Length: 131
Picture 1 (cartoon, one colour):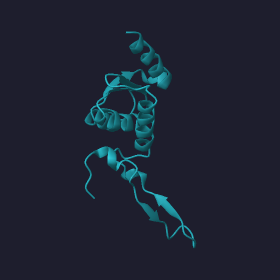
Picture 2 (cartoon, rainbow, N blue to C red):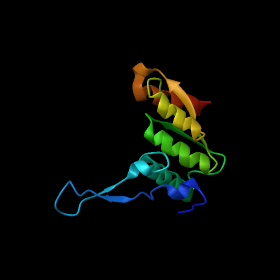
Picture 3 (tube, rainbow, N blue to C red):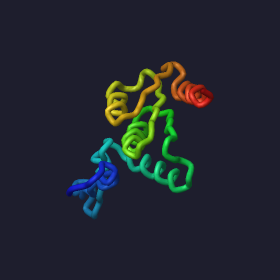
Picture 4 (spheres, rainbow, N blue to C red):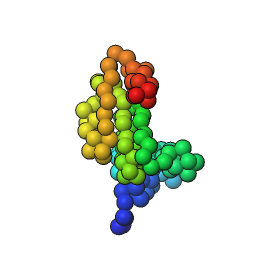
């Protein structure tokens, strides 16, 4: 399969027959094979494309998300490919691997105190928006 954009690969994951699960036909969707490694790629693509279609997201705007990882990865993957600046605000104790993936896709990381969890990330977003 040849595609022109990584965005075309989002959601094109195989159905796998799970023969040992049941005597009937049971299938699993291998969402870990999305470009960002998670079903959240599909969610991020849908959110961004719907926001564009409704006129709520336009060129030059910034996508900012409080995240603990997978949604931020998906938003970075899709958002940056579509030309948006993506800022992921996350507690400092989130895995280094998730942060590196977000940055590899072109997203930016803003860290917040681990003790404040995601509520601290939401407060930080409010501060960023006010600037």
